[in-house]
Image 1 (tube, rainbow, N blue to C red):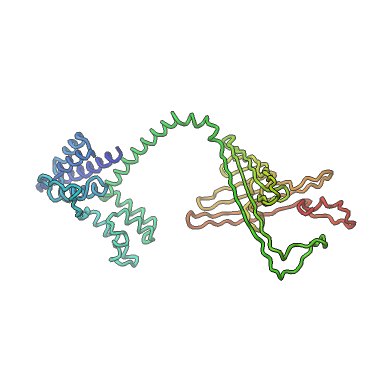
Image 2: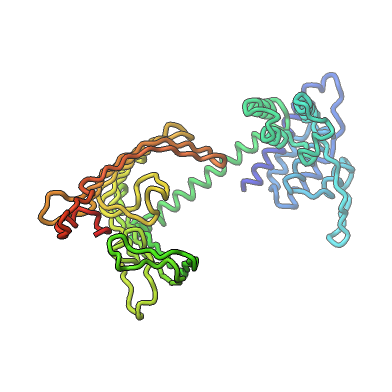
Length: 440
């Protein structure tokens, strides 16, 4: 329907423009000889592009006749949109007033194409684009090859802008002039307006049908609020040592030697399973399980080769995420790393426990700021008021140019409380609790 209406509007616009020109000059100059507009209308009717009523209405509009140049323009426009073939266009152009020649069937199809005939206005506009091409030092003989021999002004303008021959503002102004003051551009603008109207109607109709029939079922379907994720990884690794390595002892136990000379190979498995639920429009709950152990916070690998024993599947994440505004996010529980970081500071597998706030306002489409902060309990010590804590704050800026450049710069401060070990001269072990847990 959109295509038929657009073509109807195209033919109607050309006929109105031609009829107006002929009417204005009929007192002084004889009207041009009628051309094959009737044949064209019959052809379009046979192709079911227009109805008999449409053909009759267009026939009345062409009563004053249409000159050969505008007839050729119309034929080329219809051929370019795939409505008629090059043979049909050539037949109508060569026999404007006589009966149409019978075109050969598919077995003997004529492959000759009708030469492109541009409206005079388009020629002048393309010449204007050529002048701008030469003004920036380009060679005139490279003009058409650069644009794939296209004579379409809009296509040439877009390619000249992409090649930085003209600026964005110049391209906008040239396009405005072409669509306002030139015949082909004005017709294209009219067709696009009609197409947009029909698309809007179709979109509204589809939305109405969805709201009436589909959305009530979707809204009540709890599965739409859940997202399941997971992955599985098998790993094989080897450590190779130089046979000339020296012997190394553990500093805290000189009777125990560290392996520095014997090659070692081992395999590991990692499995993760996650579930995220949309509790409300701005609250999300998540839980994640993963292999690993409770003594290493930065690895979810589980070694294979332990006498076929079962593996641990531990709680890796359990959190609530509140988004009261698009740029604001509040985390609580055990959640993903909230910081902008590199591997020099934090391991990619570590998750944080506690409370964190992220505020990422946008200053423009390219620039933005970010502010992160959090409080995290590191270790709760029984019978002591000196629990271990981590307090963190971060500020930074980011720049994003889609497809070209992404840059981010930030600074952070991390304050660890009660994590420095207290020396015990008697080596009784009474102050072991004061050191980080993985060192105890």
